[in-house]
Image 1 (tube, rainbow, N blue to C red):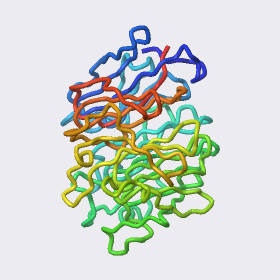
Image 2 (cartoon, one colour):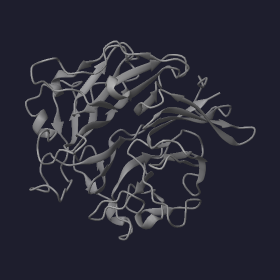
Image 3 (cartoon, rainbow, N blue to C red):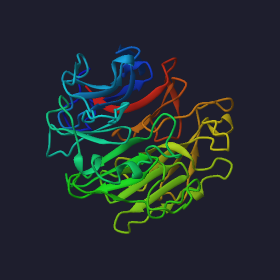
Length: 384
């Protein structure tokens, strides 16, 4: 798969998807002439692939966070558009000490700032932050967070709020204006921010209300599902949490609950949130049933995306093409993405192994692939 080296808007480019699943990694390619989609792969069949990401700085390198069964979590790197892969010589790991922590899996990968071409960040379970400066071969912990005296408390490690499968560090967002400015989310912990490249960290959770906490407006302990900063205006932050949809203008430093505009019968609980790459006003979510038993399916078995075009004040249902009933699937936090085409293409992968696409900014949807393993992540790239 050769990746387009020119401007994202080059009309010769067309989208492809990088797919991480419970049972390996796949590529979904668009045949423009026939307007059809084809699957290639799998890579590492049987391995849980939490995230596969293309490097936007050279558009040919890729990193994959994988867990090949009993062999333990690792990182693979490709420098030839995903044709061949090489395992990291030193994947993310805690220092070996008596009764020390062990990385259960690497969950999230984010390229570093454009000025740092070989830097990547990784988030793990249990929540910790790792960094590489050689393109993904060797990783080391970001000591400003990993050794912070509040880390275990911030991340609810070993508490009644720890998720059975383990809490995770995710949604690593690097400010495109400043390599020193980074955000991430911890489930269950909250949103955290550094302005000195990871030397110090502060919670950024004012305004979030989490009913499951003894103090619902506590400084930390919240459960962000997906955090995004807008690439054109990084001071605009969108957040999907366990308790709703929030928006922040960074200078205000207070989250505003904007999910109240969602229909009451649907609610505003879900995992992904996707931003329009060219329009900071516009974002999409994919709600799930958040009733007491938490079935984690589409509300009422009627799947739909919802779009806002005014920073979350109002939301419009977009369900044309989806099942009208008995559509009992949901979408994980990394499994809904937008490309940079005009109009923007939207893609989502389901817990049932389907991939759906929209080529009119969510107004209608088409099934692009079926019968894949449970989909953990999607990333959209442009190929020539």
